[in-house]
Amino acid sequence: MRSPITAGVLLAALSAITFGVTVPAVARLGQGVGPLATATLLYAGACAFALVTSTLQRARRASPGVGALQPGDGMRLVVIAVLGAALAPTLLAWGLQRAGGTVGALLLNLEAFFTVMLARAIHHEPIGRRVAWALVLMGFGGALAALDRSTMGATSVAGALAIGAATLAWALDNTLMRPLAERDVSTVVAAKSGLGALLTTALALVAGEQAPSLRIGVALLACGAAGYGLSLRLYVVAQRRIGAARTASIFALAPFVGAGVGWAVGDQAAGYGMALATVFFGWGVYLHLTERHHHTHVHPVVSHTHAHRHDDGHHDHVHEPAVVGEHTHLHHHDHRVHAHEHAPDLHHDHPHPD
Image (cartoon, rainbow, N blue to C red; front, side, top):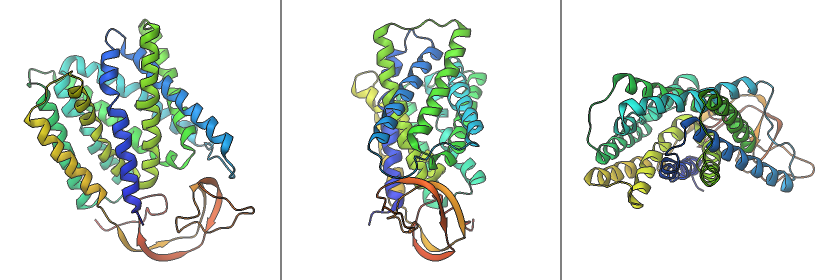
């Protein structure tokens, strides 16, 4: 049977790839378009993707419950949208203008580090030496890829601090997103993207940014549907499987994927640094894919609501009529002690010795 960690790693890697391949296109399409207007179109495309996906799911869903957002999720979503869809992109754009692209690419690796640390502190996710080494290797690979693209030059301390603050805002976004991973994925993506589009639209109007041409606008919407909508959907499902820390660590692939696509289409040159970066990224992904976590653990008595299946070894309650596939409703778990391979998901957030 495939490891639950492996499945989550593959989802996170696909999320990074889906996002990364759109980065060169967004960079090219966004020339001459204001950053807030660009962000509005990207988030609008993501929201449209989520709404279409949700409609298709409802049309064929035969199971109870749709994992709707709960009353207490509203404020969390607003904070996530402000952090990840407004504050972080604005800080990044301001910082890149002053610090340059190479320094920006180097500092963007801080997002994975901050997310891992926050997930450990807030959600008590176990890290372990294997994940720690993977994070180090992929961070070093990102540094090599950035250095390979251009020569370090003079930079602005204020710009570098702004980029660092942007990565921290995105890390908070990633960490706060973790509880929402148990909700219906399409609903979460639509809500976050919709709020993000509204926020950036308001800011773009205040800043007086002009709308792009129809051709550029449609292209950016398409990039948003793939690089933000589909990617975020995969990211949320990966968080559900393997937690915030591991998902963020693997998502560090995204800038590297973007650099590789840029090289392939002739936007930039590549040298030995990019080749070495490929080795380090491959090594880091291998460590994630081959991670195994198995020990005796205790499941306390609990009643809760989240998305689940009946073939995962933990949900053996009965439905009349029977339900196949993922669904969401209030259900009960009895006390259980057993040993099996597992990932740091909702049912396996038990403490581990440091």
